[in-house]
Image 1 (cartoon, rainbow, N blue to C red):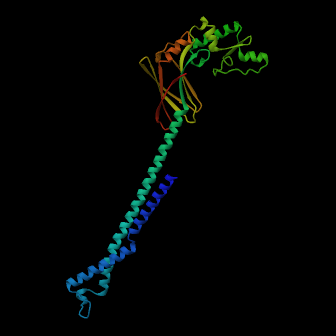
Image 2: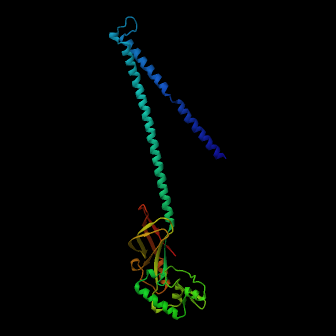
Image 3: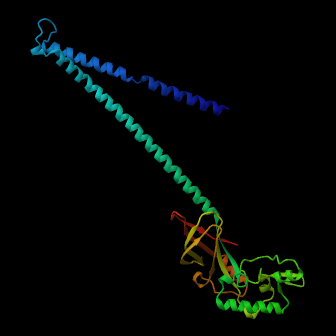
Length: 306
């Protein structure tokens, strides 16, 4: 309450001071009257200096006729009036220019604030993470030889009695609602045997096979959870003090995800026999992506370990 009272008192004092300054200004009519009086006084002084008298002895040929005097008086009055009008016009023009400049500055400040807010929202919507992946789950990141080995390993799992969960549910009449892994192969990446379920990662760990001796590798994912499209320009990986930069030009639309396999270019081996071998290196890895938004403004995103 006390703060509100103080603010009201300050505003009242400011308004009173503004009104006092306005009251101290002379109106234009008063300035014109003063100008006319000054001209009259100057004319009377000149008449006294040159001995000009307005009477019967006045000679119009010497002192000038009444029309000439009125013309001179009008000229003397018009000159200060024109100067006064010009000054007022300049003041009004200056005020309009200053008002326009202030409006332009306000608009530019608001535009910058909007761009910064959009930039912050975009950064919050982008997620970069590194993780351990395997060939069965990420066939899109596997080589042609690895994909062939993965097909043979899946056939071996079937020989061992494992059935893809989608096929098992269809056989049981459940409609095949599996746990999708997004690779579009074998339905869902989940296997079923006598009611026991295992994921690709679990089978690779519990039942390794020489058909795919090194199924594990490091990967990085950049997800765009916002509404604006960004362009990925450059990937920088730092591992054990060694920095590697890879140029890239890929558009990441709203809701899109970009995956990249980390191999020799980032200081990793192509593949590993155990996931723990990759995890130990990921703990020391630092990944940063340089990207640009729709206005070509650059920014950086740093990866978080999964």
